[in-house]
Amino acid sequence: MSGEAVLPGRRKGSSSGCPFCKNARFTLPQVGIRFRVLSGFQTGRAGVVVESPAPPPLPPTEFIAQMDGDLPDVQRRILPSEIIEPFPFAVPPEWAPPLSLQAASELDSVIVTFCEAGAEGDQWIMKWPFYYEVIRFIWHRRLPIEANELWRVLCAHGARDRFETELSDFFVKGRELLIHAFGKKPVKKKRVKPLSVV
Image 1 (tube, rainbow, N blue to C red):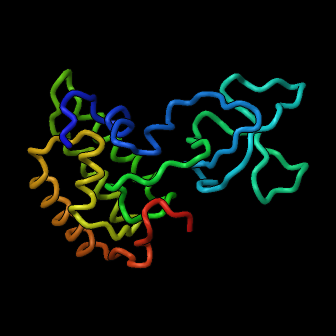
Image 2 (cartoon, rainbow, N blue to C red):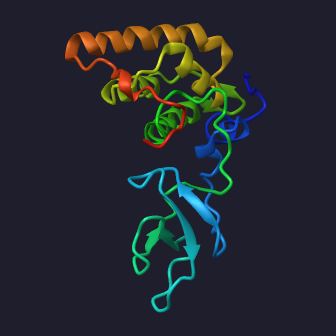
């Protein structure tokens, strides 16, 4: 699963079945399409694309949606910064971490940044400050993810196989150091069915 031929980051994640990477390139959905939000404060909510009222016209990268559970006269704008997934939803990939959809979405963003930072031409090199942020994020959010589970996500986004032992060991030691210095052990109840809405 090294993916040497595909650029690390979003492109590699997309080819590995990452729902966030596959849907990150915004294309305006047609009226009537059902979808769910994969990023932002409304992660997990579903809705349907509705006709945009006029005036005022919306920018060509935004659309209006009627979200499930909202009153009929309450509609909201979906911005291009929000990742959406049209129905039917894909099955989570086998490498998906045992985290909620919200936590996995945020982790994906940090991992994509790390993997893309290491891409230089057709080579991939280690950019440690970006990996420090991966570890800091997991520690800060108290995510109960193990080193082998993190590695599967990293690998799916283009981290090279030769770095598996080094990255896995450094993750364990780095998180342990942060816990020793500042507390905040992982919260076991945050370990859930992969990409579930909780």
